[in-house]
Length: 196
Image 1 (cartoon, rainbow, N blue to C red):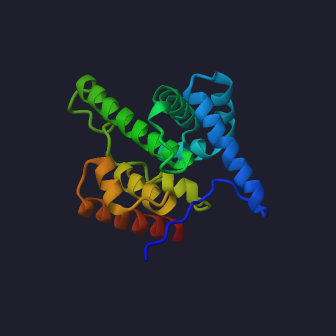
Image 2 (tube, helix red, strand yellow):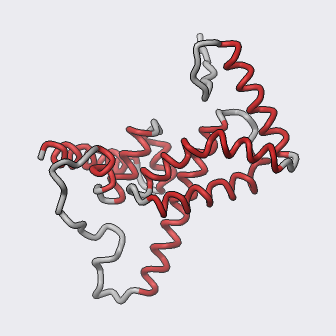
């Protein structure tokens, strides 16, 4: 027998309050879908913190880039709000939108850099070697931020956000084997860097 569970975005001891909060969120979503800007502002206030935390991880701890990505995500959320059908939690929909927005931005940035940089200057291209001056007191966020882009994306999407290998492969347009290899590489590098 297959069972399904509904996971609430809110944490609290009172289940009836959680139901009321979920109903209020759904009401805000429906009103925002019909063009109510105030309702969308309520959604922004409710979810921006969690989406920003994801953006910060995806952008290797760069708060300026994370803020810009957060803004892009909510602009897209406003434009695409009618596509939210309620089949998943709104926070999951926003997280997927954040990942997709980051990937779209990265693809357009890499195309622009490839057109502008001379090919003999490969140090600024994606995947170029990073500085190895890692501080001995590095915390986990710094360690994640120091990972190469592919490994960092695989680690954040799988181990932090909980996406499955197949989902990550589809989002990144790579094979499942590549995702697993990048994830293994990320874990190995994190272990090495945090043991120092």
